[in-house]
Length: 400
Ligand code: HEM
Image (cartoon, rainbow, N blue to C red; front, side, top):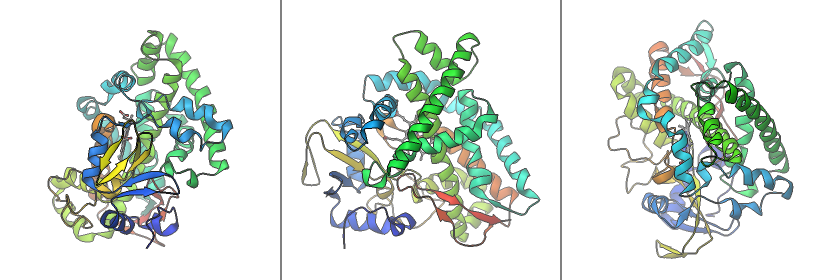
């Protein structure tokens, strides 16, 4: 059986048997076609994410795969915190971290509950909905638009930009997964969003508000804390990082519960399990399947010699099913204790929006189960999105 990572329909439908094969046969695997290491064991993934030899500044390594006319944009976007190392990374993360503390996020509970109730009110009388279009799609984009301080009416535009900007992350950084048309749509959205943000930034300079764009504009004006390029790259990151990921948590999570009626029942009977259920849904079908690092030094791992300059793919979705760490890893267990999944990453780049995503997840699942006691799948099976890394559903029809 081939250990080559393919982006085909079978893999999109269920990548977990492939991960299992890779983990048991060659856990530190050199992928010759894409020239990168694939790591599937929990211990190796965590050791790389914690290693000072693993850099997030990967743009130079992937740049030669990018068609020349799109390289300028790739370089500009790499000025975001997710693509930087210390000390730039600390400086950039600190500028926005205040808005994402547990306390700041907790304060959004009522707002999020109100939004979720509104989306469900709109479909209640129909007795059916598409969980993605009617709930999982609009929720995170509305929340982040509010935090950034852009008008909620523009959320349709925001959603389009966010989807098209995340195309490049969809294939897990594999150039094989991207077409010229992907790059074109990506570039067009980048230009449109830059123009849009420049407009909002100009307004906030003269009329500051209590929002993230104002905070970033003020940091930029202070001169040494944020360059103009960094302003755009990080605002775009905030927009992109939290949208499709949270949509996928809601979509994948709802599907997993509906496919495991015993777990759904348990959660209904004991709503206090909601926090542990959200962690388990994040582990079981992770919205982000992998991330990458570039080695700044040689590293020995699992008896193999990894070289400076090489790309390493840390497969979060695979580590989350490692039997060394999770008992019966392929079983969904909403009561799973000590669930140290890696769905939000680990180390200095640990997801800044984790608390927010968890809160949105908790409110959505709790409200869905409470308000829709007869929730069930409808029609043909759910459609997967053609994204390998950002794993999610195109649509999920249910009746209730
Ligand atoms: C279920 C939803 C989410 C998942 C699964 C997720 C997953 C991740 C992962 C795996 C990383 C680490 C990437 C790496 O180490 O290379 C990350 C980083 C990040 N996430 Fe999330 N995320 C989610 C929601 C959000 C939300 C709602 C926001 C903000 C609105 C957000 C903002 C960020 C940012 C800014 C980073 C970069 C942090 C840094 O580089 O220091 N994420 N996320």
